[in-house]
Image (cartoon, rainbow, N blue to C red; front, side):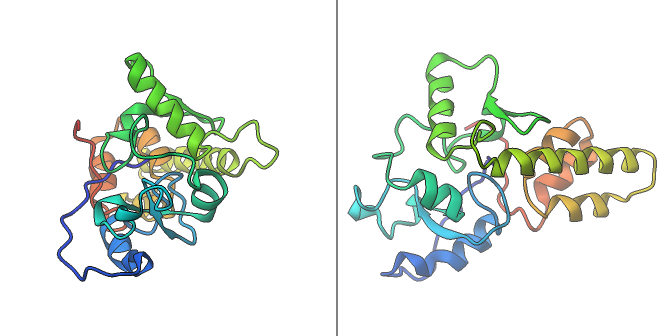
Length: 205
């Protein structure tokens, strides 16, 4: 999950939470807050509105979720934020490891509490679907790793520009691209500041 900084919201205080879609897209980019795919997106309630009606239109409780993560898996299974990690409150990239086989797991060296919270989040939205009949994320990550590794080889050989790398990365699955290019400071910085990925943050929080 790409970690983001939630900007202070000074716009219209809508009565319908769905009206916050445009401000959320402008703040976080057009990607699912969980799986990072560019997809049709819903306004997603971190703490489910069915269990927290007072938070239904609270800016701090809203993220973007694709139908798969939001409607098929997360639904209203969590009561609140406690016991999970979230991209707007945690440095989620360093808490999860992404692998070429499409799997995603809790990073090594975490405290037991942190590891449990990461694993709870992975389970909540099924970030690791490698053993499911329909491996939507697993297969998508495998393909993206191949594309990103090829792009890295071409970039290092001088056959691809930095902008061409970023253009490909902006198609989604930011964490795969950052994993592949994290040893190249110029690409890493470009991924952190790309216009399509506003508010990306890797500072400890």
